[in-house]
Amino acid sequence: MKLKKLIPQLASNIIDLGYNKEPKEIQSQSIPKIKSGADLFAIAPAQEGKSTALLIGLIQQLKEPFEEAPRAIVITSTREKAFELEEQFQSLATKTNLRSFVAFDQGILQYQKDEIYDGLDVLFCTPKRLMELVNINGIPMTKVKILAVDDADIVIANTHHAIIYRIADGLKNPQLLFFANKWHQSFETVEERLMKNPHFIEIE
Image (cartoon, rainbow, N blue to C red; front, side):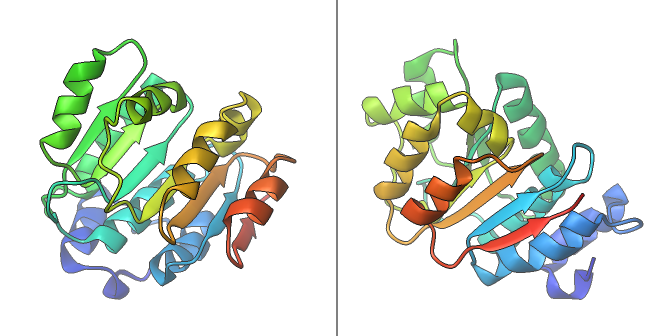
């Protein structure tokens, strides 16, 4: 992992957490693509460091807090995974002061809306709750520039593609990042409908 090309706060956190010692291949290949602003499909088996790559790329892109509206939305398969991602994000972003929040099913909808409007940089959420928030204007979307889907094969397989299309269609030139354990046939539709010259990385 080429730390010299990352913002100093992020590079320092990576060293503190030991992620620089044995970087995974998916990280070495995908982080530069995220930094470049490209749309991306990143496919690799479980435990290969996909989520870490996604989070490092997000932090590098966002760099520091900015205004109140979220600039990145990360959709993932379950409440547990959303909290896991946010915890790791906070560890990696600790010296940047980037703000995050988790919106999940069964949580109090109005409370989550209020927390989002209080100001944050990254929203981690489950697909169903994201749809519910969008339906009540619960997320200011004007500043969102990155839409990421972790566990994308699971999210798509569970027929949550409608919310992905709805969000992406409403954004102006977003960067789209799909991280998955395996390729799903619906990714071809995502590519054709939403993406511009995406990069493909697949690690077996």
